[in-house]
Image (cartoon, rainbow, N blue to C red; front, side, top):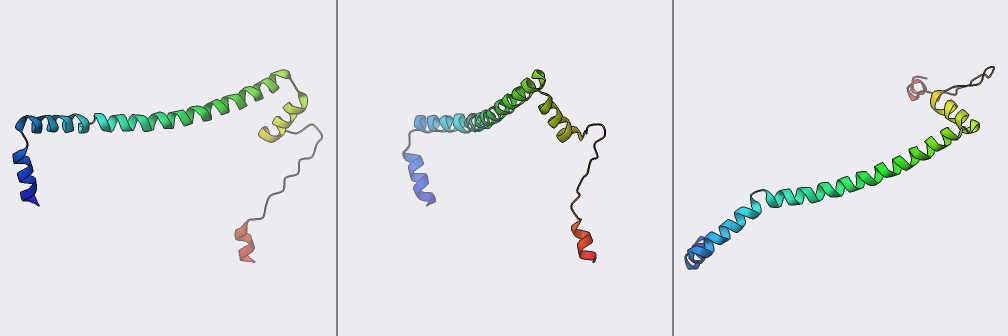
Amino acid sequence: MHEVIINLVKKIKPAHLILALMALFILFNGSLYNWIYNKIEVRKLAKRNIEAEKEHDALAAQLAELQEGDLKYLEAVARAKYNLSKPGEIEIRLVPPDPKDAKKK
């Protein structure tokens, strides 16, 4: 096997060998790796950009509703996000049983 490679190298002209080695050096010196890495990064960033645009649209819609002053929407946000209630209301929270307590019995 080694003899075959040695014979091939002997038949190649030195100028061609130098050109081939230069081409390999240029391709694999990091530029090819960087190109591939950059392509992958661009795809990842494009996906993140689409997700950010969707989040932006959702937040813009929420902001518009808040700025309109829709009282039912404001009340729903206050109750869900901040656990607020109206004066005089009694808040009842149901807590699921702890599975560890069921094993003790």
